[in-house]
Length: 201
Image (cartoon, rainbow, N blue to C red; front, side, top):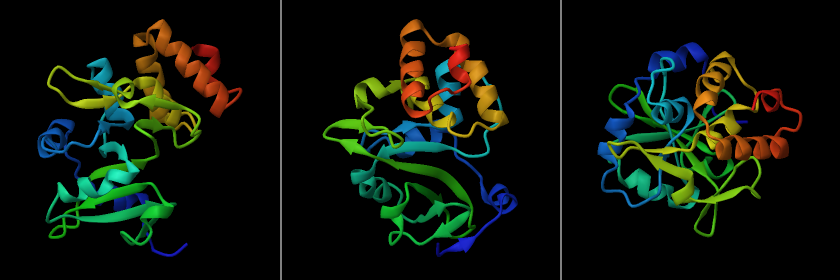
């Protein structure tokens, strides 16, 4: 794979993430369905600070990423994959992760996942047969910040859970209702059969 190698230490040094509220304000005029993803989404769902966050991730339909780029004039984008920084837009079609960079400082403020879309529905990157209408995938805080439903977030965290992913799972699990637990169990059984989280759900 081409591109430049970068270390976790370098990434930590360069990341100065915006907050979900800051991103929501900057994207207030964007018509694209988007949502806070990752650990921040679980915090917005549970309305409690589970842990510190070193970055901020959002999800958008891959085919409408151009509208996201237009919403951030003056910034640049890097494609991220397997510990490498790749060129944008040349390598964008091969990877799903894009970091927004402030040219003057080199600091990263936002990580955008370009996600599959089937018709007008979100499709899971790990199993395209799993789809949802955006209205069902996305919830909003009282302040209007959009975030992905917790069962979708946990499905992605389940692939290779780190300590923070395990902590997120245990923090959020008590807040899931029966329907959310059932959906998460069904999805995990499809994507990660035999996953240890299934015993706890």
